Image 1 (cartoon, rainbow over the protein chains, first blue to last red):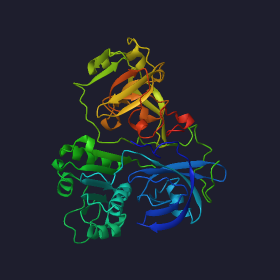
Image 2 (cartoon, rainbow over the protein chains, first blue to last red):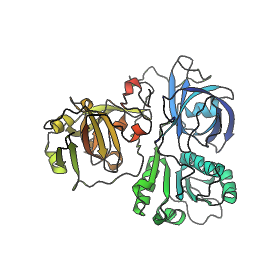
Image 3 (spheres, rainbow over the protein chains, first blue to last red):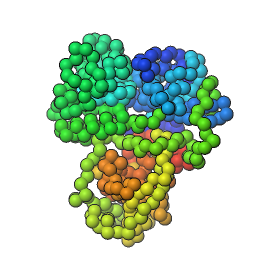
Image 4 (tube, rainbow over the protein chains, first blue to last red):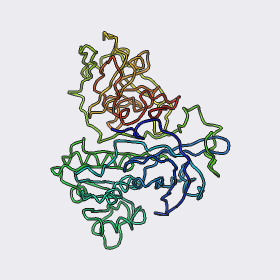
Length: 249
Length: 199
């Protein structure tokens, strides 16, 4: 397996904001230009480091939201109300301003476009970000690998990338997207808001005998629940890859 | 000092306790693992130390519990930058487990139920610095935190404290484990910020 940067030490690079997209009331996508960026695989992440005028530094990890595209990288940042880094990135950070980034990091929670197995993606909240990088990489590579995304959100307005997912479900052959709403379902939705359960994964996932690769990303409790359900349904643990994030940020 | 990001101030830091560089405090206990949480029953559980000549020492759950128990209170530091101070554990010192093992090995490869591995110098498991821990905060260690038993090596980044620990293989030569093969640092000293290869 390749190292985070494909070998060699990881260096901090200066990145500048070139574009900001509002995704939901609390999530934004930041497109950064990173001269010298070595490229990455969908599912990998970067460390972002901020330095204050007095030299104080804070760094956090963010998933890459899109496949490699020259020296551009995209991060989708969920604003954590009491956070130290995310409110700066969503509220203060301005076009042209520098931050430092280091990466890519992580060689396990990745999908390679030449892998033939069907893919099940299960996202909780902003856990959709690295999974969206896989969906976009699939499209960019012209891959026909069957993909299914089961996306758990509180309400329709909390769904990140909702418009693009609607468009891709229409245009990208072999991509299906199903939502699970935990608090408020859209009008006309069949069923009640609920936490993700066996029926959701049975209905919208792949049966184990198709030997799918499963990627699960979200808050700790969500990932624990989904991974246990998938194993209970008969998916071998080695085909279930997980990424958990805690409540701090 | 890095490149200053205009307008970034960070949290007030006068009251901050001494933490390794790049870490922040959390009152939570985040969970990070690469796959589903293994459910390992204690009947049938065993812990095996394999010396470099293939000699094995084995302990059942009951045998582990019958060994002298320690209750270390330690700070822990995750490579994803959270630190947690004053965590309380119960377990058996690696000094106890290694006492009867005849070895000249310099390295250890730790392996877990579920297939995870991690490596560290054997010296880092000795001298009261490492435990097989089965209790946390006065209760049995929860499965998502590595229960029924995990390695506890608090002076290194926490990925070295292998969850669901199953055994330790003693080796003459260093052999990287799961995250070390994926680009993380071979040793992982938080005070020297050894996160990735080359740090």
